[in-house]
Length: 215
Ligand code: SF4
Image (cartoon, rainbow, N blue to C red; front, top):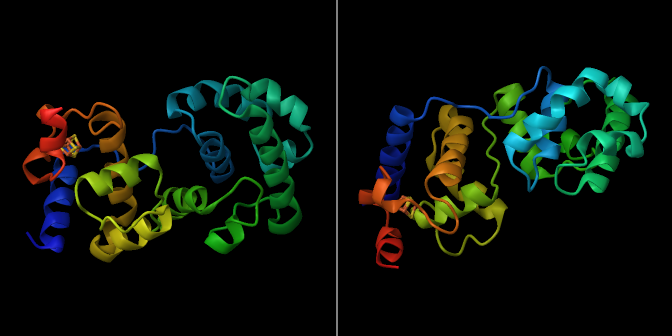
């Protein structure tokens, strides 16, 4: 099967079966989205949605969070992974937003990645969800599923190379949703340890299915 044909079939399947096209994180503004995405690194969205209501009630925007200390923010987020570093990043990024962007979340990769704790992956999620840009964040789920389905060549060993390879075949208007569909497939069906191949709607297309069904 030609690569574009494989992509078309995978995207068509997701379009038909997935409701969501954005994020499972709860937020009420671009600033809150950015905070939630930074917090979600190596943690579950469910856990983040448990801590952010109180955090956002007391620190709803960059101006208020820029005045806080990491120690205070830590108390709100101590149940998420790496709370010390994340507390420092949140205060630092709030201060960076106030100082350099008038408290407003910028829309470009270059600007977003000047903020503490904001790497390419976080910036791509914010660009896609907040600004509806054709940005594709490659996290551990997207990386794994892309390889298992044979969407990207084996030589793509970095998130950046997977991002470039995926964007070659996903139509621009579907990049943001496509990323999220692949992510959800990895989160709920094609899990790292025990993928649910026998229940997977993409099994017929998947070159990795046999490996897992036989094991
Ligand atoms: Fe993942 Fe298995 Fe589905 Fe392939 S068949 S995408 S390995 S769950």
